[in-house]
Length: 298
Length: 298
Image (cartoon, rainbow over all chains, first blue to last red):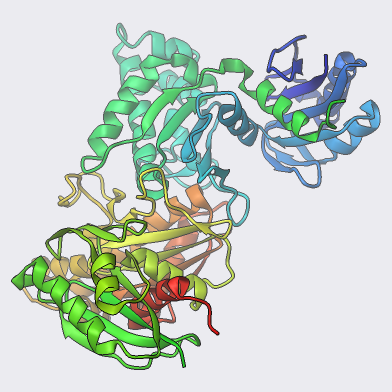
């Protein structure tokens, strides 16, 4: 059976697998991303993981990475959390594996996965919002993902939601990411209480912990503010929430949906749905990239 | 020489002309829109104006109207300021003129004109923002105007810029239209001073009148806030400001461009330009619609 190698490079771990044309994930690996050892070590680990997965059935490889990527050149341009610049990942892996290789940004990869095998399948006008360490989105209009004049469409994490709010490393204040990312929820809860809890535990403590409830209400409200703006500007029929924070499920969806309805009194808000691909969204995106490069069967 | 009939229906006046394939405007008419006489009178006036312009050289007609339009059905669905609902304008004019007729929304018509013969020509990723009684935009991505899941993309006038700000007829508070439309500038200046001045005179009085300066600064700041959000979400290379308020020219462009740069510290802001089509933008849009329906020459 033909398979592809799919690698999802994150700031914490590198997830990799062989994936069948059916979408079945066959051979999972997960290794820590050696961020502290530098960009060279991260690249070496990606190459090593790909080599483990390589066998005679493999027909192509796909990689999704964070940050700025040039898919046409096959180069990972920049990722602050990985410390790399202009890594020619496609050339390196093609040379190692003697296979066609494709690379893209993790958010676009997730968008591809959601559109191809996930909740956004068959919806020509939709948004897939990735809620992780940061927040960004893939916007699909008329069946086509939006690229933008500078290839920067979908940077919703830096929309200002609180005028003169919390400072953001981008240089602005009050950006969505400072309130509604996983990192922000943990940090803001810590600032209120002095306790270090990951975002998912803050969400779980809502009912019993007023500080958790406050931080989470501010997070979901900020997200609804930006989704209302996006609805007015790009008018999606469906918004899919994906990424690490989306494991909160209905605890995320319900308050955001309610606030979105309140903010769009004169029109029907878009349907709001949670990703069904969970933590595999990156691997599925990488596999779909690989299949797009695979030679025809036969 | 072949020409088309082009009709731009506004809340104040109906502008109509014959337009050559070169874009030359040949035979202008302008009549008051009989809003107070009801929707039937407005429709009758449109038909009458079209009949005046009809001659043997005319090969098609195009009409742009405010509000919600169904171009495929040829029906003007709804316009609050004209009081009409489901007016079958294409069928009526086709019957009157025995010519192909097309209709569209005035904002999409302006977008078509700016993209075809105006400032946005040849720019695949851009936004054309119409600043008139209300505010809305045409967003162009990858060379295609964005429609949206419900045909409502570009409703930037109802993006909230001032949390808990001025109430808007849409049911929300603090919408862009309440600060940066021509009507808002006049109304807000009146509320501060008691004086009734049209928006263009408020702009002209900035240097000598602190109330005018304040209202205009709040208007340009609100517009920059929304354009910064739109840049993050859809990433246009160019934003064209058009419509009645755009006659303010550099008094509008310069402060909005400066505020946009401040709000996008980590990326290059889109180029900001004023429409060069002025008050003819609607007529040009209607003419382009008509040409798209015209039979081939010969």
